[in-house]
Amino acid sequence: MTGLYRGNIRATMLPLLLLFLLSGSCSQEQPANIEPIITALDAAEITRNEATVGAKVELRGSGKLSSFRFRYGDSESMESTTRDITPMSSEMSIRLTGLKPGTTYYFCGEGENSGSQAVIRSRRLSFRTEPNTVPTVTETATLSSGPTGIITGFTISDNGGDMIIDAGCDVTDSGSSQTVRHSLPQNQISTGEKRIYIGGLSSGHEYKITPFAKNAIGESFGESITFSARNSISLHEAGQLETVIGSEKVSLETLVISGKMNGADFHFLRKMLGAPLLTAEMPSVNCFDNVDISDVTVVEGGSPFNGSHYTENNVIVTRLFADCVNLKNISLPATATAVRRDAFLNCEKLETIEIPANAKEVGHSSGCASLRSIDVSSANEIFKSVDGVLFNSAATEILWFPLGKEGEFSIPETMTDIGENALRGARITSLKLPNNLKKLGRGAFSESSLVEISIPDGITNIPEALFQGCSDLKTVRIGNGIRSIGSYAFDGCTLMDLYIESEFPPVVNRDAFSAKDTELFSRCLLHVHAGSAKLYKNHAQWKSFVNITEDK
Image (cartoon, rainbow, N blue to C red; front, side):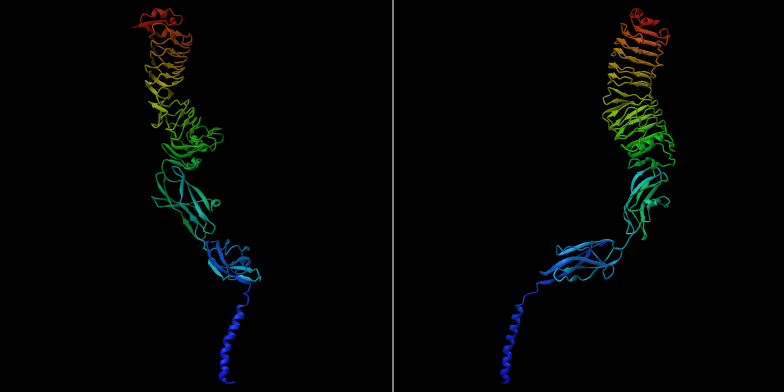
């Protein structure tokens, strides 16, 4: 065979051989179990002590993972593993906790092929946790304040990854630039909401108060506030009055308080106003006589303010200021809806009270011998003050006549009735009654300091005990409408002149005049209507007057 022939055979057979090999190769089946591919994903949400690691799993053929976990550690050997995760999706993740701050960690995804049980891993990735830092402190806020002290609050929201070793507030006097550090007690140094009392400040000075927190890394500061030590007290939370005033002597002309006050606050306030102390109770170093609580909201709660008496929301309850012997003037809370009877019982030095705008109920208090004026907010639609006397808004009824009011007083023309005991114990010496007055209540002027008074024609009855105990009463003029005079009407009066304009003698109770004053009938001159003297002299009771004269 020639060489040319052999070359042609080779050239012909080579493609056939390649075709045979290729056809044989394509006829073989693809392997049924191909290992999945695991791809680690970059770590996310990295903090000082935690991080989220993840991985993507790509399945090929019928191959799958029977189990999956993450390996991790602060060395490339990744000595720690997470719990096994049942593969449920193409991407899996887990949160790593308990990591060390400022440390490089390595991790990878790891699983077992369900077919071969071979362990498959992703390539190794790494991340670095955040390092420890100084604590994080919020701005401070005023919780309550007094003339020389303040309760301030702030929050340590993060310790920076290390134990806090000191926290509190730096207080800088703006005038001298001197800073004093006030630290919290050791048992309160931790993260969370904090409050601290800063006392001993100088009235009239302005201070910058800056919260701070410190750990081994360093210290950080919150935003400052400015506080001016003024002659007022602000209570952002009830129950803090004693704390903000403290045990230091405070010199104020008027104690001005704003904010919330409960039973504990009023108990301390009563001590400063001279109320009797409870057993083994120490007196207050401060003493006040003028109080402005118009910006206070009275709330229930706290300890009883006086024995077993408790506060109520927006109410000046009975005995709240009872026996506060130092109290002279007070402005009541604008939010108060009621001032209960005897709220100021036996406040013997009390001179003025201001009834607030929202008050719908006011009861008078006994024993306020010095009370000269009861004022009412111009915004109040229920009550009205006329020359210091408390009336209803239409001025048709006297609700509380201040016992310390002196001199003369004119009842408004709108009055038709004067209620029972309305002016009992009043110090006024002369009282002008309106012409359209129709009725006088029992004991209305009893025990007062009246020296003289005229009863208008519209009054038909002098009620029981009307002037009882009026030891200064000398002159009484009674109009022509009178028909009867009740028992004890003039009991205890030192009458000198009694004028009765009625032509016919009114019915008079035999006990109308004091039986103890045996000289009354001989001392007092009875003035009667012209031409009526004979009728009076022949009357069973009126004839007791030795001196009866007719007036023209």
